[in-house]
Length: 278
Image 1 (cartoon, rainbow, N blue to C red):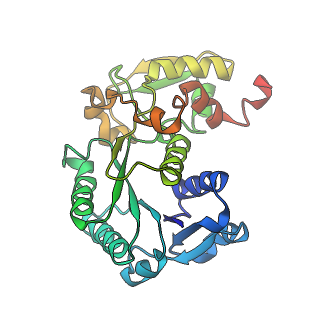
Image 2: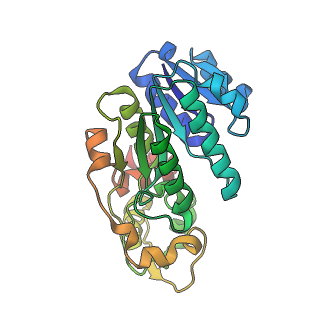
């Protein structure tokens, strides 16, 4: 049995869909906080179980019979609460006799405990010390945070700005990372492995060129000084080149190259660009 935790979240749903492409629904279960939000999965034959990160007792039963468990890290912003949740998940997996636990961590957390990597770094240490067979899927930042339907407004304005200093971003789409998780959960020889996933490197100047091509009107790129949005958190790291690291792990697990910038932009702009490229 393969069990996906937090399966009604955006990433969890993508993983569950990809699993159902690979194995019969009878071999898939989900552990969710609110079972009603998974009615559609139950209708597809998936075993829906209540497993709440804030209710440790529920997790032990939710993980029962798991040959593979995907532990999707908590989105909780309070570090103390988040680490309490993570400890509860790992303890429940150990007590339930989970065969292998795959944890969605963060790229760089194996070597750094600074800033946003601290909780992921600590969770990796707890997981290793727990004795539960594990796989760590270290994710880069999602491309979806940058490449999304909001780019339609950029095409209309004719201008794209960023404070990246021209440096590259090794983001990957949720879709590619979900497919990689499903591949790891349904194939052998991954236990004890830490995968450092990166997507194809891209820059905002390249993004402006793709928007020009797909949007059918010129989009100029302009560098700005102030960090806004997600760049308020990661701007200095981007400008230092910290997001330019590249590995072959994602391509190796997918069995194909990660999606291109053009692919991601086209998907984000649908159906707005559908008529132009039919």
